[in-house]
Image 1: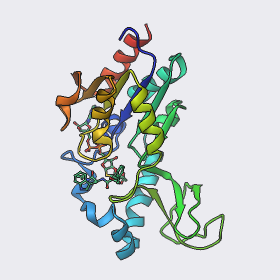
Image 2: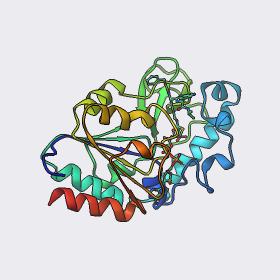
Image 3: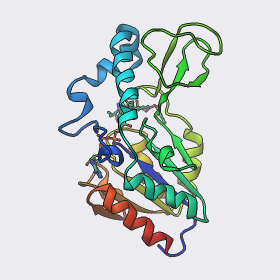
Length: 232
Ligand code: BJW
C-alpha cells in the first residue's frame, strides 16, 4: 500500500447486506420475488408502472428501517482522513454511505431517494411514494419515475468515473458480484492504467481473476481492517 495517492472504491449490494438490505443475486435476492425484466427496465415501467412504482416505493420505505454498518462507517472514515484523492463509486441506490458520513461519493445507478421527471428531465430529492403520480416540483407534470438506472440506460457520471479509474493507484471493489456492466469492467480499466486492484467479498466475484489481491469475508470485518491498514 506504499506510494498510493489516488484511490477509487467501488461498492455493491454486498456492503449493505449486513445492514439488512437484500442483495440481487443471492438466495434471498430481491429478484426472487420479481423478475428483473419486470421491474428494472424502461419497458417494464411503460408496461406496468404500478408494479414498478410499488417495488421502488417499498424499497424506499425500507431505508427507514436500516442503518449503516461498520463497512460504511469505515469508508466514511477513509473519506474524512485520506489526504490523497478518493472517489467512492457505489452501484447501490440506498443512502447508507452518506448516512455514515461519506462525501466523496457518487451513485452510478441512481438513488431511491430521488425522483426523475420523464417530462422535463429534472432530478428532485424524494422521500415519499411515487406510485400515486405526484406532480414534478419543477414542471408540474405527473410523470415522475424512480431515479434509477434501468438496464439499457446509461449509468450516471461515467466520464468522471473513467477519469478517476485511469488516474488511480489503487482500485478497491467491495461486495459486488461483477455481473453487471459497465461496473464489472472497472477493474480491467484500472489495471490497464497501472493500478493495484483489491477485491473484498464473501466469495470470488465473476471478475476475480483480474484483481491483484482478493480478501474473502464479510465487509463489516474486512473493510474496517483495510481502512485501518491504509490509514496507518
Ligand atoms: C458480500 C456480503 C457481505 C454479500 N460482505 N460481500 C451483455 C454483455 C455485457 C453487458 C451487457 C450485455 N447485455 C446487456 C448488457 C449491459 C447491461 C448488463 O450488464 N447486463 C448484464 C446482466 C449482462 N448493463 C446495463 O444495461 C447498464 N447500462 C449500460 O450498459 O449502458 C450502456 C453503456 C455503454 C458503454 C458505457 C457505459 C454504459 C445499466 C445497468 C443498470 C443496473 N441496474 C441495477 C438495478 C438498479 C436499481 C435497483 O437497485 O433496483 O443495479 S441491476 C442490479 O445489479 C443493481 C446493482 O447495482 C447491480 C450490481 O449488483 P451487485 O451490487 O453486484 O449485487 P449482487 O447481488 O449481484 O452481488 C452481491 C455481492 O455481494 C455478491 O458477490 C456477494 O458474494 C457479495 N456479498 N454479502 C461482502 N456481507
